[in-house]
Length: 229
Image (tube, rainbow, N blue to C red; front, side, top):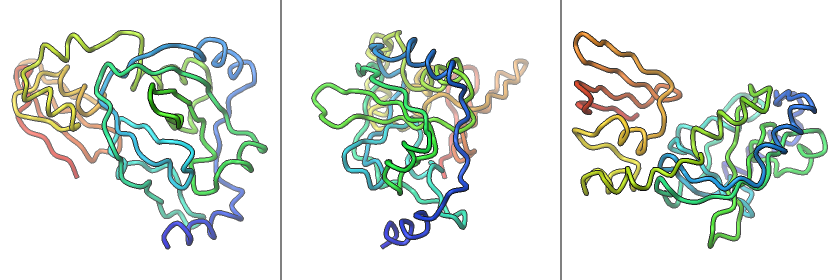
């Protein structure tokens, strides 16, 4: 019923902001990024792509934190629950970077983030493409690359993951934290924070993730406390 209501509200929407990427930068992004074989740098959630059952949503953030689709009245439509977690080091093929234009927006499923750029990945053994949704603030190929590199890159973290204690590896596989984690392990589990506040004399660090709902405190390079709302 929630999605039916959202569909009604969104059908007439024509005033949502969309990414403004000049055509040369779109071409550069396609030329430099498409066809790359990457691996996940951090654990990522995978689940239904809103009402588009032909695709899967991929994100380093918990799905309940995502603010990707709104009704015309500004109410956030959360995606369905994530179904699984891909661990760091999972191979992906970057198939396409898709920037919204009038034709694409009209042909995308209404209750999806149709005004935002999408990056399509192929995962071995999965017929549906995985879609990483980029913010509308990207304006260049370099910014697109930076957004992708929050999730996937060319350096394989599998060896570093295997070197961690069993309890930490298991927590990363659930995208959870455990006391005593190193900074590298924390990033593998929760993704890269938006902000790090470091007090070098005391050895204390305060990390905050996008949206401010998740926070962690470290002392001398080890996780002490964390909070997820």
